[in-house]
Length: 265
Picture (cartoon, rainbow, N blue to C red):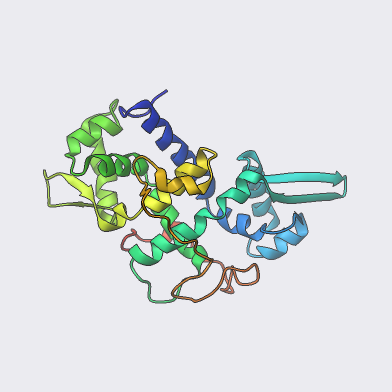
C-alpha cells in the first residue's frame, strides 16, 4: 500500500531505499559487514575482528543480517559454521565509499580525524530520520515547496502540521533550507549533493548494478560518470583494509550521541 501521495513508481523507490537504510543503519551493522569482507569466517574469527561486541551482542546482530539477506550462515558440520556475505551483501559494499565522499564534502569537519567508518555511520543517521527520504525526494523533484504541499505529498493521511518536526530536523541537519516561518523549503547544497548516495542506494535496493545510479530519474546525472573511489578518508588518509578499518582502539561513541548533521558535532 502506498505510504505517500507520490506516483506509485516514486513511492516504491522511496520505500525500497528506506528499507535498505533500515537494514544497514542499526549500530554495528556496517562494521560487521566490513569485518566479513573476504573469505567466510567462523564465529570466533568474526568476533575477534569486532572485539568490542560481546557474544550476547554479536549473535543477534548476525541473525538480523542473515534475515535481511546480507549475510549467509553456512553449516558445514555441526561444529563448523561460517558466515560470509551473500551476493546482495557484497553488492552493498561499493555504496559505502560513495557515502564517505559525500560526508567529507558536506558534513561539518570534526575536531579530530575520523575513520571512514564513522563518516558512514554519521551520514546514515541523518538519512534515516523519520520521513527524511520522502521529503528529500519531493524537494529534489519540485524545487521549492511549502510545508503544506509537502505534507499533502509525503504524509497525506496525517494532520498537515505533522510535517514540521521532520522538516525542522532536516533543516537542523543541514540538508534542507528555508528563509523562515511560512516560507517554502528547498534542498541545501548538502541535500542536493546526496544524489550519488541516494542513487546508489536506489540501484542496490532494486537489484540493479551501481552503474545505473547515475541514470536515476530524480537523483541521477547521466552525463557524468564518477570515477571509482577507494576506501580512503581525506582526513585520516587511511585506506580501508581489514587491518585498519577499526583504527581506533575503542569503539566509536554511541551513535545516538551524534549531533545533528550537515553540521555534525
